[in-house]
Length: 426
Image (cartoon, rainbow, N blue to C red; front, side, top):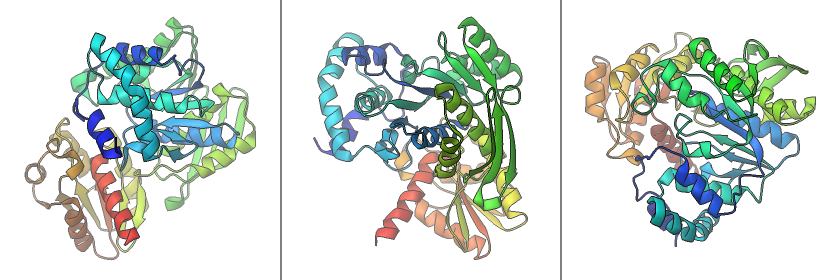
């Protein structure tokens, strides 16, 4: 089997299809000898900030001397990004061999419970590969929590970053409904860290109490103070039960990133007795592409993968603080599973001078047409394909002293990153 054949096999159930529930994932893992049972780590849910929190936590644990497996979602360029050890993605040949070794188990479970979804297969592959290679695991939840395949895992620490409206088709139409789905990752005796507020926090608190789980809350047990260094990130101080860290450097850009880092610091302390140096070195080493990431200058090209209204508004506020009144042109695309009126409304809060709507080829058949997006946005927007042409058009509109923001879809962000890497090789 080649790498492409492996990708074709795992995606044959439909890249964008899903069957919610943990039973089949648990059955696959149990037939493999339950490789997850001996792993300590953190399962991270939330509407936004999961990946950034996971990246910070992974870097801290690595600085403390652990071998760390990381399961982020989704990928930007390659499926191999979803299975990482100590910051290095699984090689393509290892990806293939891991799937091949898993095939008899997948076939046996399929005969009893139906075929596994792409996401279930990737979860099982990650655990089969990472368990013998890592002593700590950081796993980002895919969708919601209660019925997500990753909720078959119990790693000891549960992190819930925040709750906002997203994936309402699957999770519910209110903050309370969505919060209940995400709070369901809390298992008996877990140590819980959360950045939730209001009604969502009350639901997390109730779930933690039911499961006899200790709970640290951002703004109560955990406190953070931060100072922006502009495009160079932040200096922050984080305090909590039994720890206090001052003047930590975080290279991630965005006003919300210190909050994600604080959750990671707290989760790290829930997992291990860490020293100051591990926290300091880990945060300083954190990298998380596709989140207010600058990939070019003159004009400045910024990538942000926030793909729900809350994430886009937060990123937009941070971006405007950084660029002030400088010219801004957006390159925008989105998937059909989301409401274009809502997401384009969030884009308007950035007050872009122009919008170039496009479609990522990697989401072919599942993206809203560029023409429809431009029509909904109205004056100031036009359609351009493919993504590379849209980016060049936006750069021309921005001018050398302006800014181009690529946003709306992680598939679009990944495609632009891939184009940059291809040009760098020429």
